[in-house]
Image 1 (tube, rainbow, N blue to C red):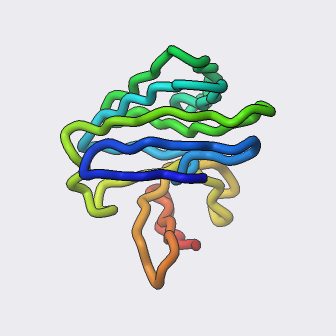
Image 2 (cartoon, one colour):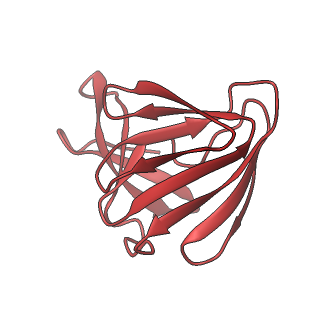
Length: 131
């Protein structure tokens, strides 16, 4: 995946099978808009993971706090751009993800932090850290 970023926007190129970074996640301090210039992107939206297909010439908006995951499950390259506003100020402090917690044995909301060059997830229900 190729992403070229400035402070609050980026262009993207997703080859078949690639996804946007972060898996299922939310930003509490910014909204995001993705515009698909070519190809078709698929997004999982909300904790229910409703599937939304975004074709070339279409866009999708995620308000602050809405969970999202985007990827290319087609055969063609997906190209486009994304905007975030206001510019992310969370520095990983307010980023959350949905992931399987081994202690709860369920998908739960996870706080996300960067540690030793990789993501660490901490279950908001039981406090188990993984990553």
